[in-house]
Length: 517
Image 1 (cartoon, helix red, strand yellow):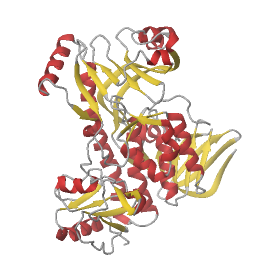
Image 2 (cartoon, helix red, strand yellow; image 1 turned 135 degrees about the vertical axis):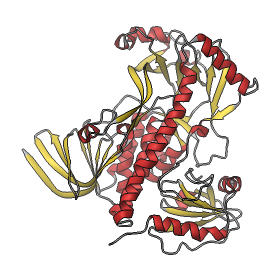
Image 3 (cartoon, one colour; image 1 turned 90 degrees about the horizontal axis):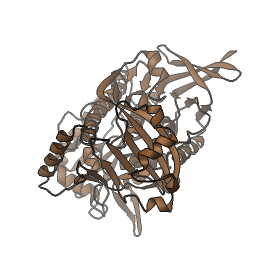
Image 4 (tube, helix red, strand yellow; image 1 turned 30 degrees about the vertical axis):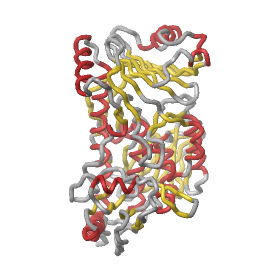
């Protein structure tokens, strides 16, 4: 039995994990008609991702779920790296307060309840249809849209949408059907991932910070999760059977350095091959790849889920601008193409940096590992300094950015707390919204944005508005007085003087100019 719905959706999303949930929420909030299909009927009950950063919390703020997920998050502890002979060789930390994005820069979280909160938010949007326990079997495109064959109990039906996003994971069926290849970035290692709910006796035995054991015999990681959740990532040695290693008996043997079975309960143990892969092509006509369907990276900085949410945050506002006719014609296609250009370059660069961190952890040759330890200690003069995790994250280097090179262009603009009343402070996005924003440093006269292709909100900071100085310090450090901020909070470009602001606005207007011919 096959039937076609009369509804033509604006966007169809295949896959309803974190990236699909965030995409559905962002697109639905913009008033678009969204269809989501997912093979599983419920949220996956085992935690996979464990870390988020402040950029993602800012996206959650936009969706309106921060209060709902906060009970399932905690600040990420420092990560201390220990070398061959047990000496401290590196320490990864957070940037110091005041926090630039308005949230704790790095957090650990419990994934299943966070996903449920995201789904509950999407369920509040009447223009979003979520279809669970079904499977997308076939996808076809034409000049007007995308057709999805959806199989469910009792038959199949065809769902029609103008665009589609594949958020269906590393083994993406959509990517396979489209014939889009993944490029191997040269990382392929077997690891065991173990999650334990540790009791009080066990907690007393464990370190109080997260630890990277950079030991040639068996590199491993201990991450302190929320409450009594602890995660180990343990390398699997040549000759070991990944299935055997993942049995409860073998897992407890590997954990015996820290715990015994009396110290906690195994929540999950699974063997994985950690890869570094990125799609060569992120768009094929009207279909886009996002999340694990577009890339996979080693877990050493906990960026897997963050990267997927960055993908859909980047793509959602661009799709909305095109679907709502803010940008048309050739400019619309250039805007949609900028998604793949920006995200692929960002993913490749971040993956390269993650691999460099992994190289420190995973050196298997004892002599080379000792050389590594000596080099790292020499570089810091013998005293290990704090390295904020956020310093590892790259900025955007290509795509929809100003042609005028600057230190601020392509960076993530801060979100200051603004004084909005005698005893009231609000985060900037709560005041200025989530569209294009022209943010002016204190003392710079407000500029009229003219008649751009997309509306622009002017945020003129007063001398006392930015109480913590987050944005003011950003302008001072980067030697500019204005920043044009995109809807995904990345900086299109900056103006060094007030006189340069109109030129910056005209450049953005030209990039987004509707082409109605």
